[in-house]
Length: 474
Ligand code: ARG
Image 1 (cartoon, rainbow, N blue to C red):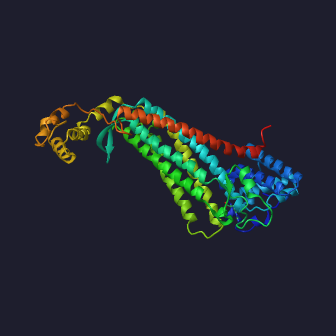
Image 2: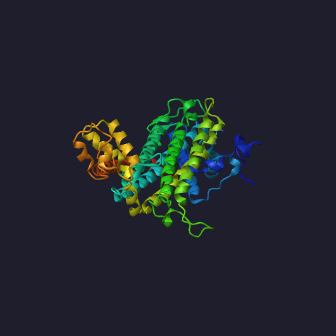
Image 3: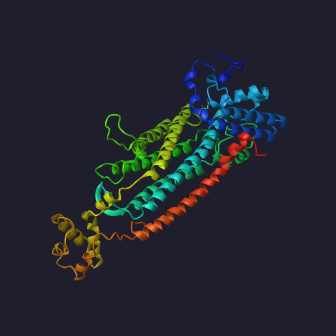
């Protein structure tokens, strides 16, 4: 394909196809344009562009943005990356003044700012999805707040809990994921623009102004650090890897609970699909795939950390390898969250199966020991007596079977053991007892309200990109 405009010399050469990053950096176009609008405005304020030149560049950039948005932008593979594509197209639109856009700027500080703007918007989008998942978990937890279910350790029945308590456990995991994403965005709130290739510029630029214009709290501290710092992306990838790990554990629980062996969850169509061979099959594919995606997210984190390891200051071309894992992990996390947001409301519990499982006498053993402790029996003695009685009994051991192993037990022990089974009275803080669960639900609701506030304050700075790219609303 030939073009009226030959590629600039810096992207010509025999290695061009290998160096090309357009397939991965195209999604950065709108952030690139937003950064360029702010940069052009700064150049105008600094007297490095005339007012007419500034206006021409800003309008030209907005035309480019419209072309990108409506799909008419003439992407050119021979221009290596998104930055050069935008600049060359701008020059076609506005003429030679387009050649002034890159004054006092390098693609090195440019790509760094693009990525931070992208990260901020991504945290907002993923954050909204996480919040939607939290809302779904909370609603399901509330509906099944006191539904009994065995709690497991080592995947062996341990103590009685409730479905609501279990779903809220997942809620808090995902809430920490959201917290981490927000913290990552707040540490990334530093603008690298003005760092140039690595050593700033001899021209009178204003990095603090441009930082403010792009919605960052402050400009970079050190130009060499600014062009090479990929900490925000590494953090984002860790956040997403852990989120995917949390999702995979939740997926595994759903898969297990939907087996005939557990039978806690009904195998509804929303859970997955059938088998092309076995007519009776209803597979929990959605939960399985959620479980399986974690491998990719962890791989993406490892890919970036490995690319960063041992890089000499300042910019190195290896840094171009940051985009593929980030985009992949973001797409993966987005898909996983969307799947879970749909799946959670469809979870149907088999209450009869759950009640039968939760009535397993073994689940009451700790409680019997606790009741003995409450009347003065040392815990270790109670543990041994109850354990031995359980081993000999078929079901719940009788008070006699336990007491005969506790010759020194106080008289109150007999009454304590006769209290019925299991009472489920675990009312300690954060536990599955009814009052404690109600308090936990209140905390979860309050947390959701806080998250809404944090996400909407992010909306303001995310919206700045829109404003820069399309112009201030009239
Ligand atoms: N595609 C490059 C990247 O993603 C842009 C910066 C190129 N800088 C350079 N000096 N070749 O890192």
